[in-house]
Image (tube, rainbow, N blue to C red):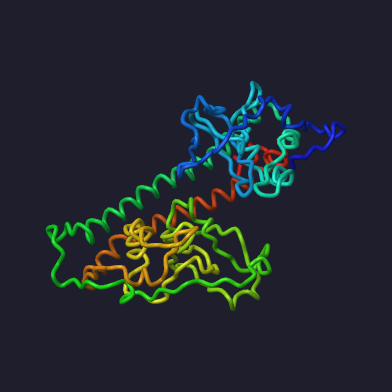
Amino acid sequence: MTKTLSSISDFADGRVPIADLNLDTYISTENMMQNKDGITRSAGLPTVSQTQAYRPEDVLVSNIRPYFRKIWFADRDGGCSNDVLVLRAKDGTHPNFLYYLLSDDNFFDYATATAKGTKMPRGDKTAIMRYGVPDLPYDTQVEIANTLSALDARIAENKKINHHLEQMARAIFKSWFVDFEPWGGEQPTEWRKGILGDYVEIKRGGSPRPIQDFLSDSGLRWLKISDVTSLQTPYVLEIKEHIKESGLKKTVFLKTGALVLSNSATPGIPKILGVDTCIHDGWLYFPKSLFSNEFLYLFFKHIRQDLIALGNGSVFTNLKTDILKAFPVVVPGEATMRRFDETVAPIFRGLENNTRESAKIAALRDTLLPRLMSGELSVAEVTAK
């Protein structure tokens, strides 16, 4: 594995400090933000010319808690903040190789361990630039970068397909239940009007307290809203934290396939569970429903801005269950609902299949990355399998 160097005497076995690996000096600027597409943009600053700049093929690493372990490969010019390290490859270092080199958990563990400060700890830049990295020939760097990039390209393609699939499903929902296009633009007279609580049982998750006493490295999955805020698929597969089984009686355990809706912090986000997990009281769930998960998912997507406007809270917008229960809903006939579910079911199967495939590819990439970097595995061995 890549070695972390602590002194000049450690410079051995082909490893050098990151500052010596054909790198220009990092650039520090302020208030970097990331949009949902992973593109970095400056915030709080009127023009890029008034910030420190980054350019295409720079590698940007978030350097402030709680945003450690975020990394971006820039594809355009921009500006960012002193909460971000911008690393630029010199001749002899391939930019994509540098990106994957810094994507390794070993680097993030090292950078996080150097953090200083109490309120918003930042990694120590001098120490980070001494992180030991493998000094590999340029051709080997290219081979490694191309191998890992091919996996990421497949993930990106699945993401693009899923975006189109979800837009298709949302368009069908709007056509049927908002614009009533199959019925000449008029709501069928036999459809019922009511409120959501008449047709859906709405309950809140629960949290054992103090939660710090129940968090664990293993055990039951513990779904946090931060697990889904940037997730661009209906299905949740990756959940970072766990709680001890002793906390089960104070929380809600849901099986794969359940629908949940965030009701605090970033409210109104619907997701379908791809794994079993416990949910805290920042989530709502629906043990009984007249509607399918697919219908409810699309319904919540459609009304999200309305829900946010109805929410309340001095710090965060919160959705009380009463708000959701009282939200108006039109209930189509059984035949219409059945036909709708049959129409969108293949779309959601595609969304789930692509999400699961991407998760497997990402796991493969993350397994290969440290082994390729350390020389334990060669590109030739990977391609031969």
